[in-house]
Every structure is written in structure tokens, then in C-alpha cells.
Image (cartoon, rainbow, N blue to C red; front, side, top):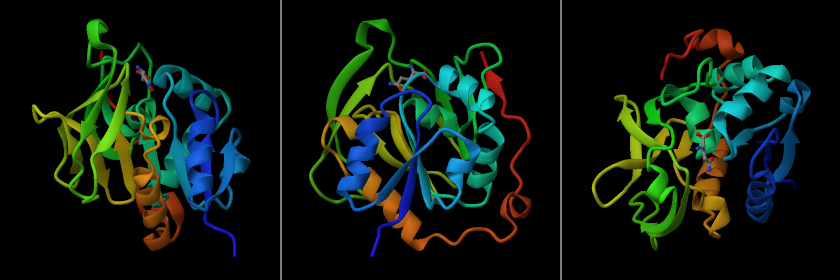
Length: 216
Ligand code: GLN
């Protein structure tokens, strides 16, 4: 028996690390570079990198709308760091013209930790996991500034700022679980894949706004 087929968006960013974690959890991993690569994918990871670059490449490769449609159809997705930005409905600090796939009813601020502390590691308690803390690497990380009513915070910094969220089958972390040996977010994606029921009729069944609002 093969595991669920999980795609990793492979336009830019730390694709290999995600693929390694997913394969270790028994997933059948495929890299996604073209719209055809999304066919038959049961879940998707949007890796970290540079959200503005991934956005541009996704549009150039014709992947933007197919990914939006897949998200609207209920495809489980995990976005880490830049991937979280790409999942957000609203972004502050975006470059001119930057768009997201959207899906998560949140506002994220890009590069929220400033230049003096662009990168750091810390342990985070994730009550939903119930086990030992998550060792999290923040690399020029975003911050979740606002969450909509359907969004559940999964992890917060000691001062209460939100750094991981879940809304249905969509998961996002401001940090990089894939570089510290943490596997539970990827496992949660696989759990969402196991329990998800795609919306019949795809995107038509669950429209999302045609434009995502980005505030400079
Ligand atoms: N600062 C990056 C962005 O805005 C995200 C950094 C990361 O993914 N490590 O896209």
C-alpha cells in the first residue's frame, strides 16, 4: 500500500527538507512545478523561501489559479514561513503587485521580526500536539497579526503573538518545522488528508475572492 500523494511546490525555497520529512512519514512525495503536477495530489506543502518570488514564479508557470482552485476545493495544505504568507488572505509589507493564493482568513506581516533579530530559534508549546515543545526556527519570519473567526491558533510566542494556525484543512507556520527535525505539522497535514472530503465540483463549490488585498 502506498501512502498519500503529497506535493511540494518546487519553484523556490527549501523543497528537499519538506520532501524528506514527508517521505519519512510514509507519504508519496511529488514536486509541483507545472499545473499537471497537481493532478492526483492529496495534499500540498508550500515551502519557505521568498513569498514575492514564489508568487511571481507561480504566475509565470501558470500555477497560481490551479493552486487557488485546489485550495477552494478543500485540498489540505501546509504553508511554512513564505508558504504561510502565500496562504494568507491579507498581507502587510508585501511588495508592489505581490499576490497570494489565499485561503486562510488571516493577515500576516512579512519580515515581522526586524533586522536585528531576523533569525532565531525557540521552543514553542503546541497544545494541539500535547507532547514535548516544538523547536522552531524563525528565518526572516512573518507574524500572524489577525485571525478570522474560523481560524485556530496552534502556537503562540510567550508574549501571545500567533505563529501557527489552522483553518479546516489549511495549516500554516511562521517558522520552519522542517529544519529542526519536527514532524508533527507534516503529520497533521497527513491527518487532514486522511479525513478530508474534497468539495464536489471543485472550486465552483467553494468560491474564494478573485483578488486578495495586500497592504503595503
Ligand atoms: N521573508 C520571507 C518572505 O517574505 C519569508 C522567509 C522564509 O520563508 N524563511 O517571503
